Image (cartoon, rainbow, N blue to C red; front, top):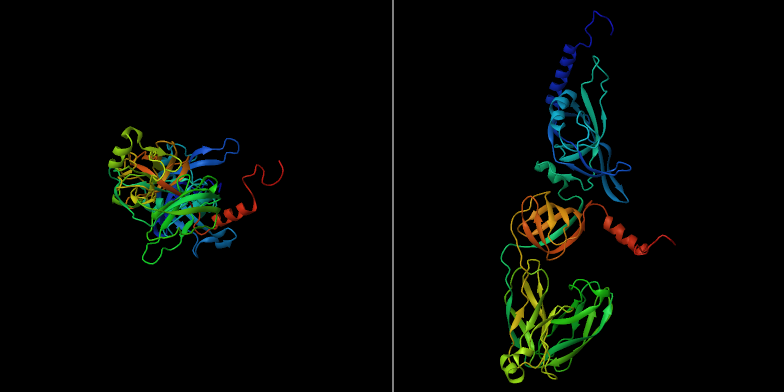
Amino acid sequence: MLNPFSLNGSVGEQNLIQSLVNEQLRMYGVEVYYIPRKYITKNTVIREVIESKFNDAYPIEAYIDNFEGYGGQGTVLSKFGIQEQDDLTLIISKERYETYISPLMKNLVNVELSSRPKEGDLIFFPLGDRLFEIKYVEHEQPFYQLKKNYVYELRCELYRYEDEVLDTGIDDIDDEIAQLGYIQTLSLIGPGAATTATGTVTLSDTGALSIKLSDAGANYDTLPTIGISSSPDGGTSAVGIASFLTGFTGGIDGRIASVLLTNTGAGYTVPPSITFDSTTGVGAAASVSLISNAVSNVVVTNAGFGYTGNVGVAFTFPQSLIDSIVDMSNNALTMDSTSTSYDSGSPFGVGFEDARGIAYVNTAGIVTFVALTPGQGYLNAPDVLFETPPGITATGTFKFNEIIVGAASSATARVKEWDASTNKLEISIIDGEFGPGEQIIGQESGATYTIFNSVSDDLVDPLADNDTFESTADSIIDFSETNPFGMP
């Protein structure tokens, strides 16, 4: 009004309305957390946000405008799985934001707008234990009562996580993304000093087996099951295990490197048959012979600690045999890197074959059992030598969201979850590739551990069928081609 005798729209009246609004919000509202987005990296061409962080949260009272529940389409079943498409409308005080939150945000680095709520910022809604993203800020409803606006209306959608860093220091907020995003699980070697495994050896009389691989086959991507014919009555059936050329979990062209025995058996009078059972590779074959005076079994007397992979095992020659046949200088033990076993370079010729073995290690870094090629011609039980484990460090407690760095690869990632009881570390936002045996260091906690192995899981949405779609697509289109969609 332009009437000079009217006070409509005076500062006093405006302050009264604002005070009443603030009071109503405190009476009928709920405390939410306003979480500003920090823009760390942007695309220089289209200004797309590449990396952002949320590490500040400010409590503020808000009125829930959705009196009958969430808005939006709700739970939707689509070809990409089950999706939640809930909306939420909140009303907050303009004065409270400008006098409380805005000054706290004013000097924050990478915050682009602090004078009003901004689209892209987050709201934590404690009643539903959910995060919502602000999509639109309405600041002109109600429309200029007494020549002024008093509230912000925040129109929000359920937040969809895309590898942003959320670390506000408030557990109820931060745990919202604990199991979201692309996650790798690292199995780490637990605390303790690395120790070398030890064992004792027994010799068989007759009827033990020796297996020689005659055809390595092809296209094996999992360890095949080895079938060995049963021994005669009163004997013991042999049990075997196949190994690949590289790490025993994947092969070069899927070939089998060797077949080792976890139980050499006893009582065989004729060589049994051997089969390879696998859903992937084909063509592997092996011949079996009976031997005497062979290494029959290795009993692990000390499982050791600190191993990061399967361990080479060496067998010494009996000292009395060495002294009578060959000088010690010709009997040095060497490591055969292709088979991960020791070769003693037998000087004894026909009738003597070196025993070889591989000790298998579990996720705790200790030896569980020894598979072997028994050899032949031993007069006395040889000594068994296990490969020395690498030096390891296992100390400290990883913190949520801290950055870890690989000492060898310089790969980085953020900690999702750390379970000290199982030595499992879940990580996300990974840059680079961590390798087995590598030492990782927490940049805040200083925690230092050695990696045993890693497992990659796609957990962007536990209800979606992303992996199914990807594997099905791979069977339709060959993405190894330069141009899988046609000629270049």
